[in-house]
Image (cartoon, rainbow, N blue to C red; front, side, top):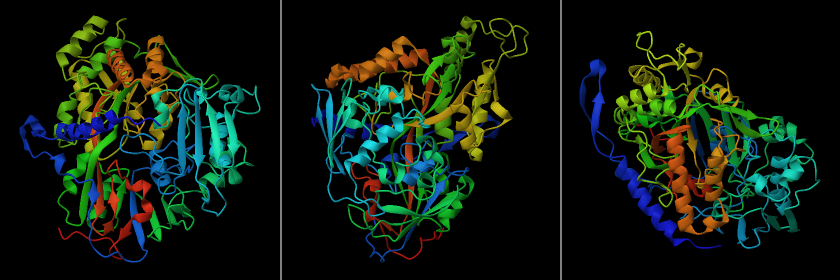
Amino acid sequence: MKKRKWFLLSLVCALVLALAACGGSGSDTKEGGKKGEKEKVDTSLLKSEAKNDGNPVKGGTLRVALQTSSPFQGVFSWELYEDQYDAEILNFVTNSIFETKEDFLISDTGLGKLTVDEKAKKATVTIKKGVKWSDGKPLTIDDVIYPYYIIADKDYTGVRYDADLQNIIGAIEYHNGKAKDISGIKKVDDYTMEISFKKISPAIYSGGDGLWTYAAPKHQLKDIPVKDLVKSDAVRTNPVTLGAFKVDKIVKGESVQLVANENYWKGKPKLDKVVIEVVPPTSIAAALKAGKYDVTLPNYPSNDYASIKDLDNLDVLGRPELAYSYLGFKVGKFDTKEKVNVTNENAKMNNVKLRQAVAYAMNIEEVGKVYYEGLRTRANSLIPPVFASYYDDSLAGYKYDPEKAKSLLDEAGYKDTNKDGLREDPNGKKFTIQLAAIAGSDKDEKIVQFYLQNWKKVGLDVQLTTGRTIEFNSFYDKVKADDKDIDMYMAAWGTGTNPSPMGIYSKEAPFSYTRFVSNDLTSLLNDIDSEASLDPAHRAEAFKNWQNYMSEQAPVIPMYFRTELIPINKRVKNWSIDYLKDTKDNLQNVEITAEEPVKSSK
């Protein structure tokens, strides 16, 4: 594997940049429009590791709060899950083959080793010998190959049959029923496979180009039709796994009890159990104060940091998040038969100046100061700053400018013809934009209302789809299904460690919920993951071109870059969120120093 030293330096600089950008002071908007000073968070003081020198107890149970107002879906398969909360549970029982190192590239420290022949457009994956699944069966290369056949199956029900997967030679032919096998996948022996690609790009070193980074227990799944997998007990109630823990008990949508996996290849965990329970956002601060939980996942809401920052039973860890919040505009549909996104030229929001005006009308800077205490800042790009070699810091983005918004709307023909304060469409008809937003805390609701008022001030009548914010699972069901009553929506996207936007914004990407497609976009995405981009300078320029194009076309408006907060109870030992030594890769080392979580004295 090629070593890219430039990326390590960029990562270190990016961490400093992202932390510094979140600091500073600002004004707090009170009722009645008064402004007063409000202390901001100095994110440089947030730790990345919970230091605990206490003596550990033997075994014990780690108590995890899964912070959500909705039940988790309970799809415990990396090939099939679509819910962020399922992913958090899966991290404890993960079937990951690869681990990553300091530059987010695949390392040789995991179950698998990757070697790439760039000229031949081939990759070889070799796995460790002697590794067992949680049920005691041996891990073989058949388990690494099997996920490709799940995803490429004609009856696959998930969202990962995309442009990346189709980059594997023979995947499309297999999916279309024209071949019995994926010709580009070859089993060499029980511990080695070879994959042939149509192209090789730098993305492969981060798990892109079609490389799948998880194993699936073929011995458990092979007799279950792919179309039935998502409903099967093997996925829902008794998944066979490779991670530090294994599933013991499940209360559907509410809780999961995990027990130590005695077959874990890194050694049996020091904890006996992990209990993960759904906790509503409205209750989480009180629960942490009372010592009911050791850790909250996926992260603590930054707009409620004040509720926990002074609790003496917690260490609040923080890091720049590999994610961004965004506003997306619905401009098309997903063709489920052809499995491609299709833009509707006549869609309500398929007007560039309208989309730009919506963006300029949003006072994101004020929301970051008032509601997030500087823990979220206005995003200018769809690439987080942590990817500093690719992030374009020169991009202006959409700074709050209501006069610019009004001017763009006038130019596009959206004018207040009846003088009621709200603009009509270019044909003089009533114009209403339907916004979908996720239900959350009281502060989340206030933020949505604040933006509705922002848009009203420039003459746009924006109303909430269904008349209110929407429960998390229902929200994504509607967005994914291209609900006719959604014109735009507020969501977030976690990039993971692979910065390539191909799997999110390509024509074949089911996750491209805006359904925005163009020839220019396809060309720009292809350039990012092209053979020419094996040259770091070329790829950096390709990323810059893509960011500028997306900013100009505005099918998606980046809203915030985020600082991730993870509160850890002070009885927990060996918990880190440092990207260089993330605990999720070393859960076997986590310990506790008391029988129960520590309660706050405040």
